[in-house]
Image (cartoon, rainbow, N blue to C red; front, side, top):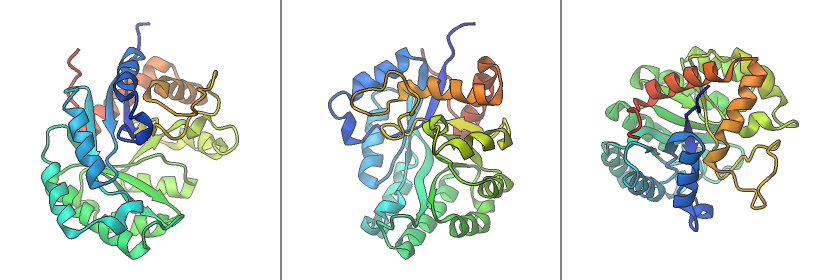
Length: 269
């Protein structure tokens, strides 16, 4: 079997932890079979930085543009107009990271809801998929997605770690499910491991969420404890083992799902 290539749908490459070796991390990912990466936009500033980074690696790096619920308090109405303008850039493949986070409430829930509404509107206008974040806000988020379901083409529940009921609620709305290295955690990831088989094969995508969520079963562990996109094949291998599925078959399914969802062109090797 030849070397398998993968796509990481969620990498926080604008994060400060990559400031000293960002390009090395990207090149290392390519060497390790991650042929394309989708950089996560979490604020207006980081969305602009993500686009600039994508322009250095055309055909290999893509990004989302959006405002994470943590930063809802910082955004102005003018930011929404700018996000809409950014969404027309050729490297932008989704709107987000958007959604609700009532766990830490870095922004007031009412601010989060308003910012989420604005981004749902942008996604509808731009006809781009949603890259979704949700924590301890499932009921409210589900209601908002349901009421807007005719307005957006696709959505992925990024870094899904929820319950069986929450999974089925999202699947009922035809959402895709993003799985991270959380699946590799022998403590917190057990319930997700059991749910994996419930995800239809045409709805599954994978991501590292680097630099966060370093797989706990990675050996040897990096001293920095920083996750990188090069760990994506490790996550894929774990998923294949849990599903008792041939890795090449899983690769084909996930690649097809991801290319179709984001409308990614084949990489220009």
